Length: 251
Image (cartoon, rainbow, N blue to C red; front, side, top):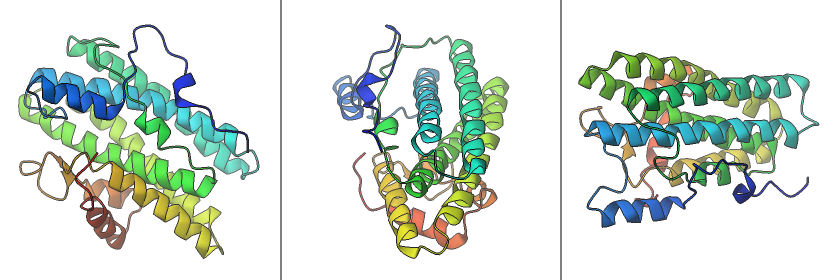
């Protein structure tokens, strides 16, 4: 396989300001803010929505890269990934509109590329495990929490838009489970490596300990167990995820 596309070579307009995730957190702390948007105000909700928009943009690019990187996978795999590219492009449009709804704009907050850099597995099975089951699973948690916040503040536009996108994310996670099983059938070592890559993603994205098991009112980002069951996760896999996100308090 050719060398992966460098994340700093992604095409961007001038309005995008690229910054490492750790530096963004440090700047927030220097300003007397929590390292991650806490959703306690409309401004912090806007910052979260901007971060999700950037994530959807990188998801669109990353899934397109998956189509390109693995030409020898089954045609049905390529078709599923192409469908996901289309979904992610719609999500970018939706979150741009939500930014406008929240009186925000693209480029108001820095773009980090950690999602893109985490999607660099060179094996197709590991790629769908880390991206679809890991990062898209993370999206289920974040979106489920944002829907709860939208209901709490009485914003039906935000609630219904995010709920619409969440349905797609569940489908993406389910596709990841399907292709993880198909691509590793009869090859337990390959499956083991893919799961280990997924768990490394889950551990990295515990969001400084904010993402964990618990009720919406008790934890900043609750693991969306029901959404994951809909996406094909077993109770054993959910329990392992909960344990994995507790390994490290560092984002």
